Image (cartoon, rainbow, N blue to C red):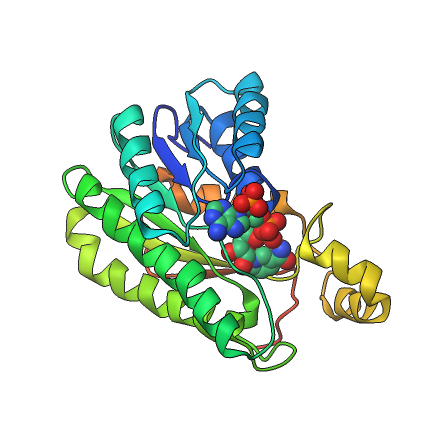
Length: 253
Ligand SMILES: NC(=O)c1ccc[n+]([C@@H]2O[C@H](COP(=O)([O-])OP(=O)(O)OC[C@H]3O[C@@H](n4cnc5c(N)ncnc54)[C@H](OP(=O)(O)O)[C@@H]3O)[C@@H](O)[C@H]2O)c1
């Protein structure tokens, strides 16, 4: 199947490690031009070099903290200018899970919610003429009870509603908006590796809860994100694609 990604311009936030990095690699492998970021300049330089090794398209990046409005908005404008436009935007950064403290509510609001909203508002004017795709990275923690009440779960849920409403408002401009909700994803340096070390019992119970009896990989999420963002999914907008190996138990109508 041709995903039609050659020469498309893709912006991905939080893309030097984990799921975002794998998404960046996969778009690059498909011939897209890719712009990445993270807070750490050395990581950005290293990732740009590594991704470029096998890429057909252009790979660029710059450090930016998504929490900082000015730094974030100038990263978007700078990347769009360098690539000559933006076709696909993947807001991927999260402040992650944490207890139910006011500090964490603000942190998740600024990073997860505003980190998505500000990016969307910055890319939309660039997409209005020739269309585009926005795929937000959410989580199964937003759609089923997970652990304890916490801002991560509730505020990620707000993004699923936001993406649906954006899809209705911008369909007329051929801009598709979807979200992808991964279940637990295990990789070196990731949150579940830390949990495996600190609370092995919880890790094992979580693993067994999956219908497929294992945790997912960043590649398995990236495959779905790239497909959903590509022209191969041209008739799909406003969905929340759950990518969780059967971790959640609800019936999804
Ligand atoms: N891992 C899972 O099990 C899982 C499950 C469901 C959903 N998700 C979702 O998937 C997405 C990616 O998660 P992940 O586990 O792959 O994350 P991760 O391993 O923590 O990777 C985070 C990436 O984002 C960068 N980053 C973090 N904070 C940033 C900020 N404020 N500004 C700019 N860059 C920042 C990091 O680099 P620096 O630290 O150098 O900035 C790194 O490149 C998130 O939205 C998460 O909620 C993950």
